[in-house]
Amino acid sequence: MGFYQALPGFTRQLRHSRYCSGRVAHTPGRLFTNTTGGLVSINGYSQRIDRHRLSNRTRVAPQFVMSVVTETAAGEVVGIVGAGRIGQALARRAAKAGISTLIGSRRGPYSLATFAREAGSLVRPAAILEAVQPEIVVLAVPWTNVADALLNISDWEGRVLIDATNPDSVEALASLDGKTSSEVVAEFAPGAHLVKAFNTLPPELLAADPAEGSGRRVVFFSGDHPRAKAIVGSLIARIGFAGVDLGGLADGGRLQQCPGSPLAGLNLIRLS
Image (cartoon, rainbow, N blue to C red; front, side, top):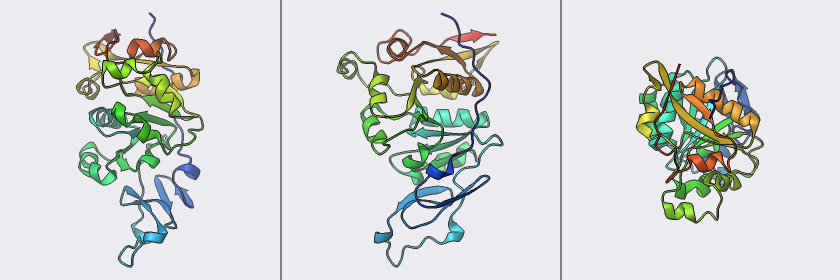
């Protein structure tokens, strides 16, 4: 099996027109929105405001609407849905590589305030509907929460979705009627260009320095869209790992899905 050669770094600016609902104005490193309904960002956090349910004691003054994320010089932002050990490990690893992340949890952005302070200015808590707006989004939720996490996104419009999930049991895997787990996830994400990655290593290895001696720790990935795989391969290299392309989701995804696959938990180092 040959090793995948990562392409040069992929960068893009956020598309403010679908970064959140309502009318928005975008300036470098800042995002503002009105409060006529939809997502509102306040002091780095976000919440959904229903104008019909605002009480006299609930007001969102314009001067308190702050930037959601500190963009890198290249404008790179990666969304992460799921703030468990995998999601947090990837957010920290991306920050160390100078890549900003929006990390969302079903418990809401305020639940991640302590983690965000510890992780640094390139990591920002967000509502899940915000975290899915960047060009690259990592899905890192428990298997039983996959459908709920993707429920409100009707069309991914070609954005790259990195599937870092795994079925939680052999029985769950056997219930997929011969499909790979990522093929099932793709069905919940219409319009997404899905790539399976970051699912074979335990969180402690994803969080650790990928450099080992004269080599780098291997991350396997697979997918059916060449452009999406090139983008993910570049991201893997940017955060310090050595990417190995396993092919399409039907074959490569089967090799790397857990539990029970031959690559699950395999800690390999690619020597320089």
